[in-house]
Length: 291
Image (cartoon, rainbow, N blue to C red; front, side, top):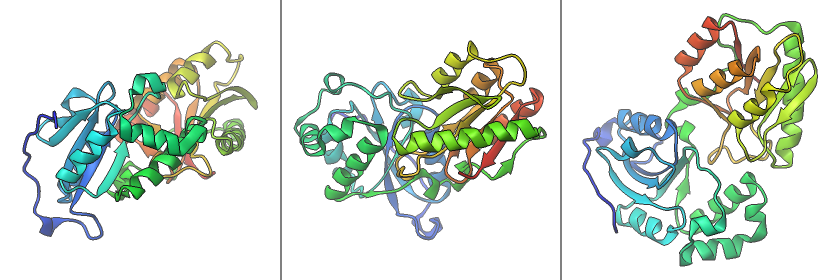
């Protein structure tokens, strides 16, 4: 194994929260979520082994941790490292730009996965993740959602800041929820921008920030509109949930939107206090809604 490994002091097993495994492997992509998960594990006495994905995970995500840096396609190496570190429980967390097969450079184990999963694994995010979960479980691993270890990352219900959505904004929110759920059933995307009842844009492979960038030039005169982001009806919440952070709200402001609505209890929110402070300062609303 070509990993640089470092030790970390962890809490004793006796302080581990009830129902949590003693050790987990974290397959870490980009963003802040992997580090927040590791901090939560430290606080609860759960040991961590990190597989940091090259080109996606932040360099400092492995500091003070037993770890392996790996490319996406080196599945055999990843599985071997997990077993050598006696890991049986996994959390897959962080953003990963979806590469082509040629970029993945799959090893024999990865080729076996794609051969078995077939074309369905390439047709949408949900299809790929369902196939990935089945593959990892067949390899003997248990898959967990990040919210099992860090419940404070779940989006709360209701209005989070001082600004309340107007009646018209609630109409746009309800419209956005309806459209996003229909798109979700088709495994297209999680987010939609609505203004005055008109759908300005829907999320596909480009992601939420690019969706907001596109919609900036499409806004109509008048009230700003809303970004609505919901979990797909069939989505595996252990592997992928809609996520917002401060950058999401900043992009919504640049787009000229009045606020954002996110699927409560089924979405992740990174830096809740920062988001609320930014929303209050810029007179925007942030609300957790049912779908």
